[in-house]
Each structure stands twice: as structure tokens, then as C-alpha cells.
Length: 166
Image (tube, rainbow, N blue to C red; front, side, top):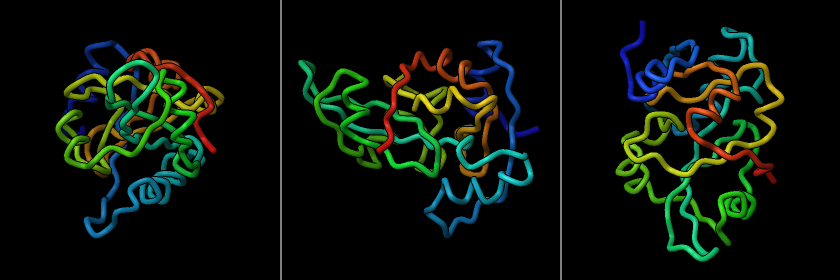
């Protein structure tokens, strides 16, 4: 059993069925999503599209002051910052600074989970995730993933869904 992270604890408290998967993280890599795909595709029996990355963005415009938000999308896809901003009511978005990500979420890059963040950030999940029977996303630590249904991920994070890839 993996040590509990805030993400794992939050899923347990919410009564959401999930499975925790562990893989060996290479501390020399910064290609966290590709590493997860390589490690888990065969061992867990999932496609790359079922493994999601969590990106923290800063949204501005749209009548509110700049704020952080989360975009969750399949590892092989590229985020459309404009689409993510629009889905969350903003005019534009940029990638958030690493120190802001850690301070807001409580997680380090490569281990940011959309679940159990220190500050629950507005979240958008790419609509393609809903086409999958199950998805994997970070459990809050590099080398640790949680498997759950995409609808449960949307529910527990209070996310909206939209096409946010470009």
C-alpha cells in the first residue's frame, strides 16, 4: 500500500473508488508525463490517452483578477492555453511559475495532482477524458498515480469539461 498523499486521502474521504499505482521515478528526468506513460502503459494495460497530466496555469481577463487554475489533459496532447482560459471564464492564460504551483497546490512539479490540493483551484478536464473507461492522474508524488473513472475525477475536483487541446 502506498503512503497516503492528500490526493489519496481526499478520494478516500469522498468514498471514490480508486487504485494506486507506483512506478520507479528517475530523479534525472523532467519529462514526467512521458515517464508515467512508459512505466504504466504496459504494466497497467492503459493507452497513453488514459494517462493525464495536471498543468497549473494563471488565468487573466474575463472580468476577474488573475488567478491560478488547473488543466487536466492526456499526456500526449498539447494544452491550448486560450481554450483552457475560455473554459474557466478568462481571456488568456500562461503557465504558472513553479513556486506558485507548489505554494498553491502543496505538490511539486511532476507530482501535482488535480485532487487534494492545498488550495482547491478551478479545474478544467479535457473532454476527451470522458471517452475513457478509466484514467490515471498523479496521486501527489512523482512515481505515484491514481486510477479512477473520469466522471469521479470531474466530481471530486468540481471541474468543468471542455476541449482544451490544440
